[in-house]
Image 1 (cartoon, one colour):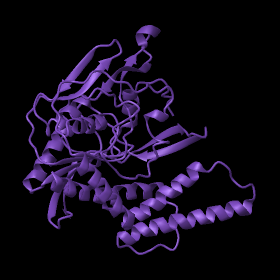
Image 2 (cartoon, rainbow, N blue to C red; image 1 turned 30 degrees about the horizontal axis):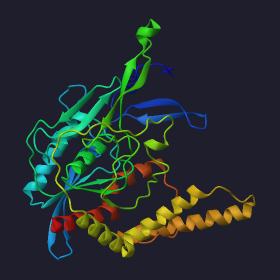
Image 3 (cartoon, helix red, strand yellow; image 1 turned 60 degrees about the vertical axis):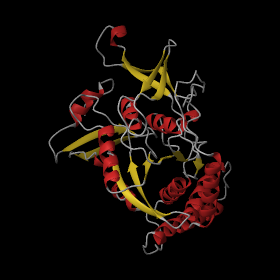
Image 4 (cartoon, helix red, strand yellow; image 1 turned 60 degrees about the horizontal axis):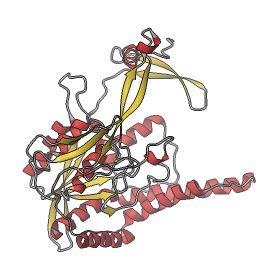
Length: 392
């Protein structure tokens, strides 16, 4: 084993890389403090799952008319930081957007759930596909008080109805994109309040202070992001126009739960001309969505998941009796089985007699097929988009 403590990340990566099919051994320390030997077979890493993708969905609106919605999923705002002519999220996103336009999509839904962000420039370019050239997208204020306004440099290619689907895992560049769409009245934000990360970090080498090349680095917060309306995305995140439930708990996940978090604040707004989405239209959409979700089988299963999560989150005492603990465990196993069979019924699969503990390999396989699973949040977002389009 080679001790890599203090090494540059790039040097560690070079050591791990090797001939395809060969085995690399990693000696790691677990959270519990134990030392574990991990063996990994070297292979090509497929990043396609992290690339922008699209799908045309058809849903009937409240008036009985079928609408075609183009769903563009973006897992991250990736970019060619190294300058090696690699793919970028904006280029991939534009390709998928044009594809949806070519097949007749009447509205677009941008799925940014669990998108933790990435490149600011990519966020500006993607927002620019929907808003006029020269429109402010985000404001940046540095630690020394200097403020700059970042504007889209290109002409838009799509002027139809837009929705942005977010959750508590949507952060940073995702919040910039959702925030500017909301501030301009360009589209509808759907889902859950976002993560609330509005800070900019830079990694700075400290070798010059140590007097030698140790590869030591410090990550420092150097600036904050602000929406064009003046408020920071920090701490508060982006609050959706139409709210949907989620198993991601705002009290557990989010910038506000971090140690030494910077507070929310605001600066003067940028100059822009927003459109106005009718408050009555948004309220009517929310009421319709609430009514649908009350009887929707998918949301009933999701509700069980949320209730189970909340139960254990709020649980502050446990019985000392082993027999009572076993009863609790058996009830929870049955609840987990009911939830899994609820999903399987919606997917047309046979019910399970019992739950099997997934191996690490099974978890990877199941993660690959996650897109094939029932997604009540996405389905309801599509219904919201058809109602939004009909109401414009």
